[in-house]
Image (cartoon, rainbow, N blue to C red; front, side, top):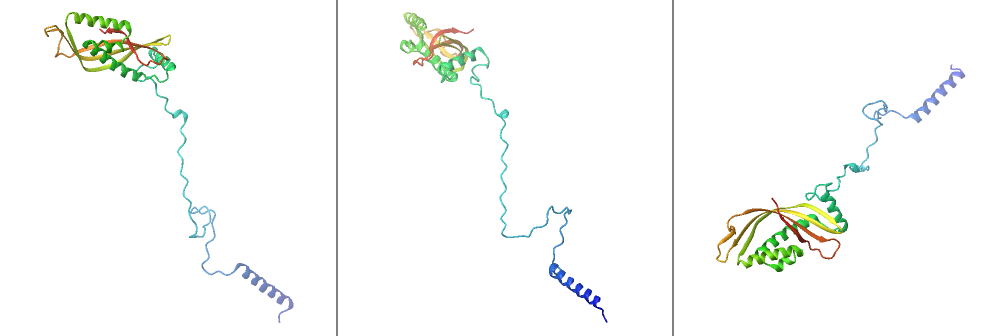
Length: 236
């Protein structure tokens, strides 16, 4: 026969077993293994897979902003025309200060064209063409030489084969008057014939190497854009 205390302990044990079973449930064999926080395979417990999860696109990585130190320095304005820091460059800067649109390369292109026109016009005795390109004293000298040639009834022919070089040699600015000296290197065929057509100077078949140093001038800040020849010199 069980005493009253044994019956009470048995009833209490059955009650506790039933409560634990209802709270913890039963093992079915499909339970997930417990999460091991020290496992090397994963840094966090596995998450349930879901077909409703949409992965976000990765944010593009922007390139680092360029440092001001890496930026290319501005190009030298008179590159190929005058040496940086030279007196010629400083004079060109002064011209550009008065006339911001001044372009030294454009000037040299125009000087080359004027050089060919003046030499050709002098040979042909074309005073009208020379008048627009020469300063008065230079024009007077050219006209005197043409008149002397005509007095001897001589004719002159000049033909350029090439102007190989037009190089800025010197620049001066005084009282807003600019003078640019250009050294020309060219190949030229030139011949002077007498009244009977005989050659008195030069050759119709020989290409001569000619070097001239000419100076062009104009007043800056005026409406007249034309440069005029103010001095000529045959280089040695």
